[in-house]
Image (cartoon, rainbow, N blue to C red):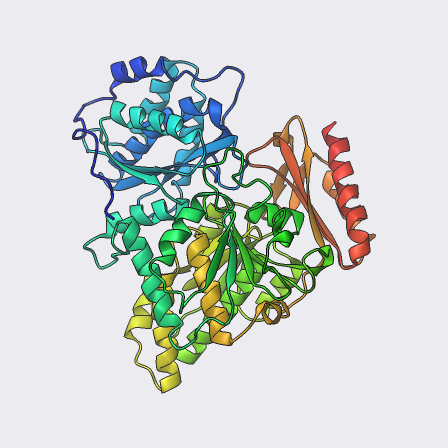
Length: 557
């Protein structure tokens, strides 16, 4: 299936901003009073029914971004990912399928908070002048959305914003977030030496399925993979993927696939629910066929996260549950890739990027095998750090992550002459992995296939994967505060600079527990502070976590 045809007229050629059109459209999309929006790593996220003005303004900026990039395609995605259904969000996708250039984020925040048309135009005008945007260049923007009931209303605001700027528009319709990232990159690289794939939805499935088939040839599935689709767009995407991969290569049982019932999205299911609560999706223990040793995984609402898990005993027993989160996926992938690179005899370096939320045991495991970098929380930080390696593996503990192959690494992999049959096999696997992995952003479907390939290659089940290292007991808490901006961190968010004195109190408390650590950081999207605690003794974890949370609450009072 090809992308829908462009739906707007050719881009307007103007010497200045279309101020009259912006002023007229602004009347329909005024900023809600008493609300402050912030554009960050996740774009803008809030209740869906108050997001129209932000969607209109982000469309204006997205058109300007395309003009700045010489008319290359950029993307706009309407989604709130793992949040509950009442929320929604919007984020821009840059021309290579990556996050929006960070220097543009402050302009996004200013624009969505402008209290008048005049103020909005002033922000846009400053952006045009500072970033030297040539307004005569045509703009091309593709947009997509997830399954939330507020999406049609918000997409309408996006379309009107793009029309106001005279942009040429492509409606990608219902898509996972990673698919829209793929489409942007594939379109902009089409016909070049860096061609990423056919810039259509079917091109996406075709690329993944062909690479997967090569990698699992002669290794038939021994078990059925149960997938919790979070009642989101991932259910539709998985159904389409299954049409490209025969059951003889991948046995999948899709659950939580209801994308029509109001309130079902991410409700008691999905990657965030499983990771946060350390348990099966609600009611899954009652499903027939869910038993000890069963391989299971969960997507989130827009299918850019995935976590695996399995049971060591009856599903009704909470202690049977074992989580294989982003840290476990990163360790599995980095170890496998490092082994392939060595066997292939290619002179490239595999490295891994984590955040402070990574379990201490995973960091120790990885450091014995590959270089490891720690960055602040947020995909943009991990992505940029991963680009510094020849092969950069990055996953947040929440299951969002991917693997980046530099241009130089890809060239070496394709040009290296194998010195033995084993080296030839390793090289062929690396070539197929380059195609299997969605390198634009974390992708639940692509990452799922990657895990299945590695487990199939190693002939492992979940228990063998899990046995690589034992996670230290850990806990994540949320402390609601009036002003999250009073909390300032440094050292990749592992130490507090402000409020003064709080870090010393946390250090004093942590010192009382064996093999413990804890850190706090302000949320990027909510008025809260997140507390992470880790302890060598499981029985001491709650005391440590609750103690740090109380310190935060006392300082915030």
